Length: 292
Image (tube, rainbow, N blue to C red):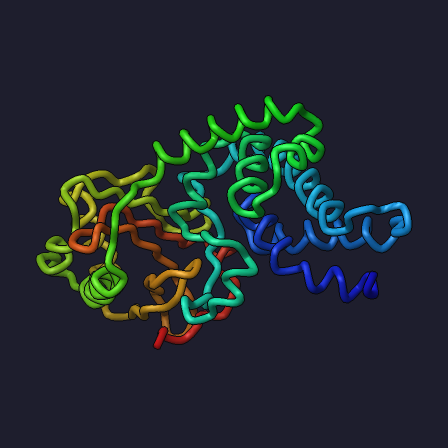
């Protein structure tokens, strides 16, 4: 087998993709992989039959342990919780996105939050890493039949949470650009035209930044929220279209300081969901430039 360091580095993107989807945090995923590296570097490699499966199992089990511990802490979190956004991954970075797995969109990440720790892990192992039911059973310490049932239930819960639209990429991109252009307009009329009547706006401030304490429902309420933000900003903020979790999204900046990262779900004609991360602890990445 190739050098253990080279082997681990070659798998790093896929392991990171698994860790990020499990925990919803770039920093926590990197810590998870650091712990996996320590286990890998001290392991008896001669006794490991399938090195990749061994590492996937280690990352999965460590991630499940963290998820269970985090459930109790989450109850103390102020306001809605959203995943830490991944900034700068563009659709033209096809190889990088393929290494991470098919879907890292904010909508998918939010849908995963409906799942218990083992459900989440089993679904990711099957649908993202394409592991067999027998392999998943070994990783989770359950029977293959039980894993099939867990995955079926998890898929159903994710489908219920995640909106499904057949969206033209160019049409969605135009909506994102119009959203960025109108978000900070205190008039609000042009912004309101972009929204579906049943739009929802979830903002994660984590008690560290001003944000709505509950999910805002409906176009009127969402427009009032936007005009309030625009008036408080008083011309001090500006927007930029940038890649967020592999899709076009909107950054709100004060100078070059990142104030918010916003991911949008649309049907190509109206915006149905807005996910806004304003917790500064989740915005430590340097803001990327506008996508080409």
